[in-house]
Amino acid sequence: MADEKTASMLVLIGAILQLVMIIFSIYEIYLALPLLAIPIIGMMAFLMVCVLWLLFSIFGIIFMILWFAWRKSPSSHKTALIVTGVLGLFLAGFIGALLVLIGGIIAPKK
Image (cartoon, rainbow, N blue to C red; front, side):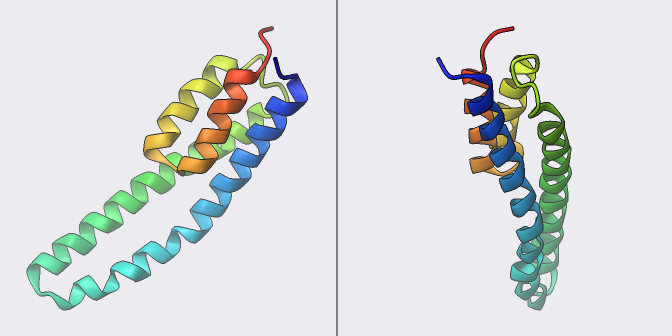
């Protein structure tokens, strides 16, 4: 079984990767700009990309803040790390959420 430091390091790396994902996700909007050249369907597709980007960014920011706050004592936030890690797999950055999920799983029970 892993110790508290290993779980804390995994949560910290996951939170940092989530921050990087949020910063680089701004480029997703630029990649969707050519859709605006198509009259109506392109505008609707661009709007859908913007709404999905906004939702993923909001969830990513919330999870990142929580993970930075919980990294100091992952054993006392074991269940919360596992739940946000699983939700983060679908709603935020996959790799960061996976590391947080692993960190929550290997955190020792308090």
